[in-house]
Amino acid sequence: MRAFILSLRSFWRHLNGDATYERYLRHWHEHHAEQLPPLSRKAFFAAETQRKWNGVKRCC
Image 1 (cartoon, rainbow, N blue to C red):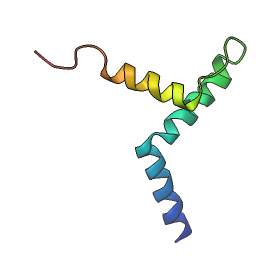
Image 2: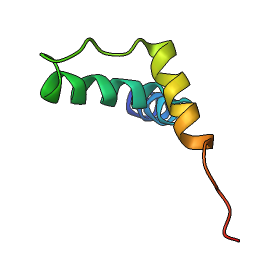
Image 3: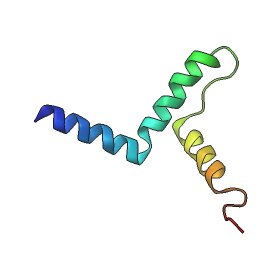
């Protein structure tokens, strides 16, 4: 039962984007830690929203 709850929690975090920010922080620590400070959670999600919705998103 505990394993099911943990997997459900992991799935939910993947759906709502929490895991995305944590992946960003891991990447930042591995590759960019000495250059700039990491984005805050709010700034990260604002940048992701801009990245997703800017530009042409249609086929024709």
